[in-house]
Image (cartoon, rainbow, N blue to C red):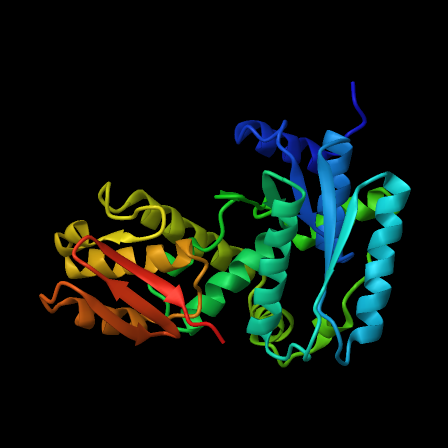
Length: 311
């Protein structure tokens, strides 16, 4: 009989269900509550085949915190015998949320490849999922945007999507572990922080249980949308089949475009962007190249694909 806590049993079940117990995993590790809980739980369940990576955003007003967080993560991994990596941004300060996010994602994928890890584990939890769905609705997403994150999505593993932040904190408390929190989490300027600390708090104060009900409603809608999948053959590995696309209804075409963009890790698009692409694709010309939503769309008789514009 092992001494696992309840959260660790849940994690083991998720890994067993998805056949991940023998896979090598790189954990995105910031030192905060979420990622500390994920790394510790994975290491207690697996003991081997787990590595961690801290992403240092480089110079800026949070430089002191970033240096200290990197050392906190390094020390924790050394104590527990977990291989540790740091990727630090070099060059001009990263300012926007999009720049910071893109650097994190690309750096973690680079380390995953370097360490020959099968999966990248991220500590997104239930509230993160709700906030992501709300942000997409505010920005004008269609139903496909509600699907958002999944537990296993290509090489990304997010085992905490059904677990609350409070549960993660209680898990750390049970192990007498203290996280190293990012002071920028208190900044209400980013929309996500405002939703988390102001809007959802006000909603819960106005009607107790409303946040959980909202999250469950969006989850039900997401499940319904996933069940109404596109016909087989529309979405390929990195393109949309043009012949299949043309056979779809207008609503399905929009769904196909949204699903394709999300599969390519493109998230900053709206319904108006999708409608503009649809309009361009309505013409019968065989070869097309046009620019919408910060990307070049390259079309031929067989394929519809995008390529990000190099800065």
